[in-house]
Image 1 (tube, helix red, strand yellow):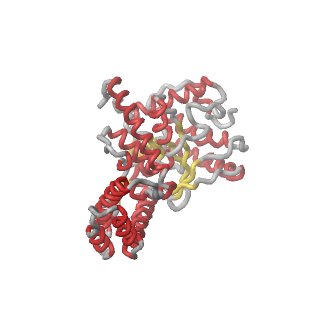
Image 2 (spheres, rainbow, N blue to C red):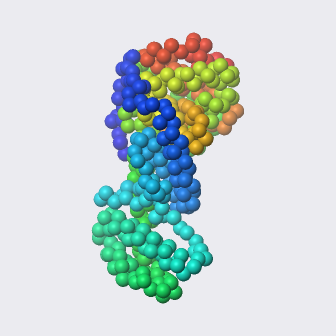
Image 3 (cartoon, rainbow, N blue to C red):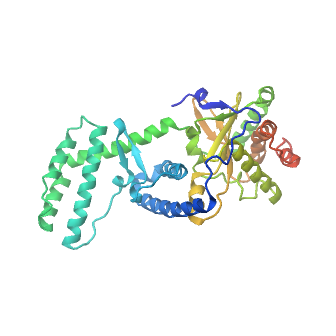
Length: 373
């Protein structure tokens, strides 16, 4: 896991990045986004059919967003759009973890499907042998599969396939596929912030509020804001949109004018920080609070499919002991929740406004001052 001290880059006052660099003509870009939207919709539909990937969808979703932002050519087969890296440079496409039920078909259809599955299994074997070169069962299974005569009649071919599928060698192959997936999951966990997902209780909010008050003098003495250069560390925190701190809901902002001011704040901040990332993470030098701003991976993909502008959001992340983190979130209406959010956001709004000359409305800045309602 990267050390916290290695993940930051000082954001100097008045530093800007041009939002026009690499810009493309809007019309071709819009056409590309529409095509990408249809493509990613097919990918998501395929992923939804793979139960083994249920708990890794946020990571896969992030990969889809990165493919989109990179503007690279996408594989023709949506099932191959996302592949998982493993040991020794091995990669497995997500589709190899799909489990399909037997379907009624004609002998000709059976032979065609069997050939396709056999080729896919052989490709998977090559990657697993790269990942686990000491696994003796893998070359043994490869030899068994290559001995199958694909010219046989469907009935005889089915018997040969069933013999392989019930062998201990094939069982070990399945076990190594599972191991590959589990090791990939573990690797993702080690490279990402470990975030507690529990909602804060009223008492926990009170403790957090007091801690935020106590760090206030430190922030005034050291007001420079840091921009995380490797924001991927917090990628899973950006999987979904904050339910209150966003540009569509109204509960926290109370008025449409203030919500629009928040939207302008995020838009201006995005332009200053760069537009080619779905989100950024900011913090003070001496603070346990982090500010994530941008567009969630889920909303970015959904906006492509719907053809709408993606809503933006912000999240406050609290650093706990032992490289553990927790999002500052609670059930709507929990006493002290809104006040805690304001207390955490106030120094960011004030000092970003000053350091980047954002020219935020005074009333918007005052909204976050402690004690306001």
